[in-house]
Image (cartoon, rainbow, N blue to C red; front, top):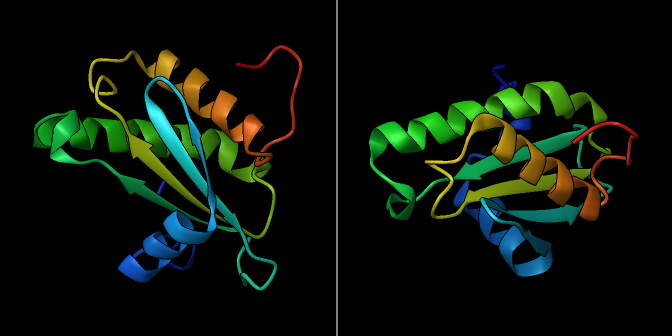
Length: 121
């Protein structure tokens, strides 16, 4: 899924704002940073951070593709007015897609981004 440009976090200022004013939720493979902002003109803005600590370029691109896949499934369920940053942790490059998906769902529920659903995750 390709997020529309207005729903992607592109500026360093946005990432820094989430880091400074938002809340973080840590999991095994991801850290989810969330900042709610009622003035946000789109339902949510999403950004990824995959540093060299998690692996080479191929591994980082694989993680980002997997996160986009998870977002294509769960994006419509995300509560409105939120900036969301997914930071890949060391080990995310070797994680199976399903493990990464479960970690994202668990963190998104803890952060209040998606409602809890029976039989999911």
